[in-house]
Amino acid sequence: MTRQRQERAVRTREALVQAAAETFDECGFSGAGINRILERAGVTPGALYFHFKSKEDLARAVILEQAAGLHLPEEPSGLQQLVNLTLYLAGQMQRNVRFRAGVRLAVDQTEGGVQDFTVYEWWAEKFRQELLAARAGGELLEGVDEAECARVLVAAYTGTQLMSQLSTGRADLPQQIVAMWRYLLPGIADPRAVSGVTVDAAAGADA
Image (cartoon, rainbow, N blue to C red; front, top):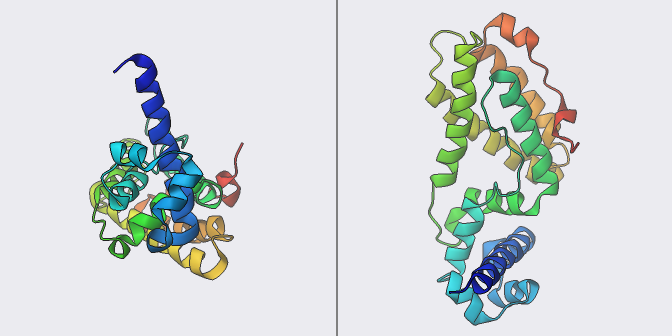
């Protein structure tokens, strides 16, 4: 395959994933028809099946690539960065179609028979690294297990965003994440560290 053809294939795949994300975000898995995705992407059925075996395979790509385009910290630095990260994600849930669609599909995987826990493990590891940095900085209470805490945080975040979606269409998600941290921080952080962490819903806004 020539370089030009390779680049065209990459663009085609990207167009398909983006179109699928937009369609899944609007219609859910069951309501997202292949023809609508193809029309939005501007590609042929042959191009789709060159890259993906099925709609389920395409949905899995949206789930696994939900973080594409997000500006995530390159290096862990502790509790403040972890809090800021979750508030940033809250803002992205409101504005970033691919991220939102990936989360929607990950939460309701039974709808289309897509079963993949990988993305939850990925986010848990991302959070765990921040917690490890917090531990190194003396921010965590003794007895806090970083891996276990990271999984609890992913679960709490997932539930909070789902409740916000159902109640306000995620309009209040940053505020709900602030409330989540108001109760979680005292349970995991040294009191001196808690007083030094700023939890501000505005941290989720784009720069």
